[in-house]
Image (cartoon, rainbow, N blue to C red; front, side, top):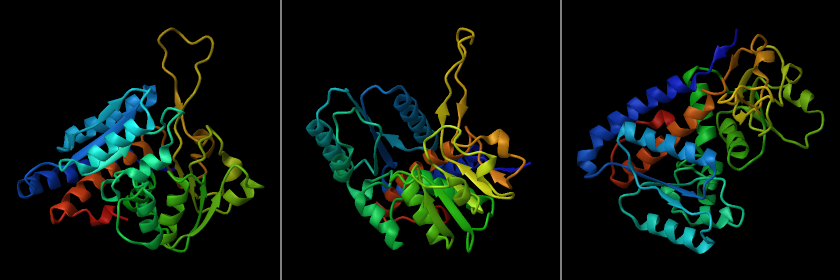
Length: 302
């Protein structure tokens, strides 16, 4: 049976450390850390994600200064809100919840966020910091993957790692973080020929393709470490009883591979909780930096 890469447990441990850091440093800072999650429109999944982030903030003592703008908001209105959050001295982290309504261009809006308040690590400046190995806020999901791998002492140096997916949100920064850990990294994607041959070379496989149940036993070699970043709701069968809840799945067919691989992240309960935990880490670290305080979280800042 594969080792379970339990993101819920590790996220809870990280929250305890963050809560202690907030309690220790708040008197010196004169205020708690502040996070603003900016949501535009009424995407149901975004509503759930934002609520989960705000609950996590409440648990560890981060003040929430989020805003919920209507779907009809213009580019200029969203930009004005970002600028006001940049200027707000109570706010240490800003996250623009994606996806946005179709008429909005996310690129200029992310670029408008103060890089030092970029809680999601997606600003061009911070991606450049990652590329150059400089300190700065890191993209939350790949940073969470790295924390999971470290927590379970899974070696990366000299290992062959394959990342399936090349998005700026996950795939590209994931590859850079694995390279920084001295893994030999291949990035595969939807147009990769003979994908099975490429992924079977992986000793560590991170799947962030955004396609439900894409990866199965034919893609893997025995003993591989597999991190499943995807999360999807499966459609309910026509005969489902009233009130039935849709099941969740990842990009990996977990039931096919759990006896084949050495470690596997579950869906749900693997990478998802770690994404929220690293958002909190970015916020607390930024708060400490602004006030010249020691955060004690160096092992989580990749």
